[in-house]
Length: 254
Image (cartoon, rainbow, N blue to C red; front, side, top):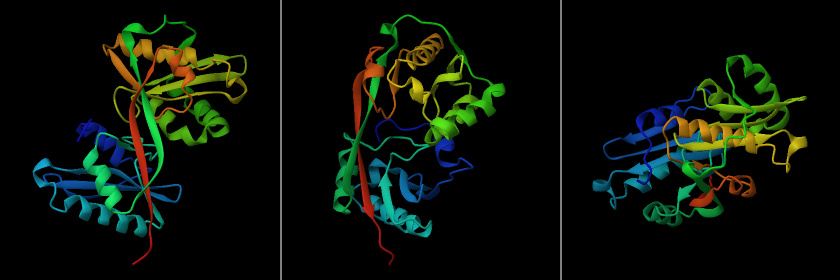
């Protein structure tokens, strides 16, 4: 497996109280983890040990995930792109074996996502004007998310709880936020600005504040995860990096 998550990241992704995964298999052979979100089933993790590949293990694990998705009341199963506690925004296009497994199992490729790479030695100067959110901002942040970015609420609150949320303010309150290390260390995002500030570069100060904080902690490179608009990240020197395919299968009850 490329980019294997360490144990503590797996724990955060698979055993979150508000979105626990169904985990099946044998860690020495292969495992699959299935979650439900917004009425859809998702494969959060599917891995087979190298010595056990080409023996049907992946196929059986995928079939178990489909059964679990149906038991959860969903009628589709998607690979990755499973907010809020995702490990990858799809299947890395270099994971050829998994791509082939999914195609053979009649999964359709439905979208493509990508990360962007940032060399922290080359980022612009710190613009200042930002702060690290603490527990005192939790209620305000939750209300802000509910109003503007409800789909990112869980990730942003987790970032705050982990000391990984940078925010900027103006006369109207929170202007922009940048979360990092939410589910995976070295992964930046979500990044969001208040709706009236969209398209005005309002998120740049929060983003740069986070990047400078990460660099000060000793990291040299990070990835912006599951990128939407490219321009805000190109402004700070980010380049398109890893690409991920998202596959989906409509399920029918046996």
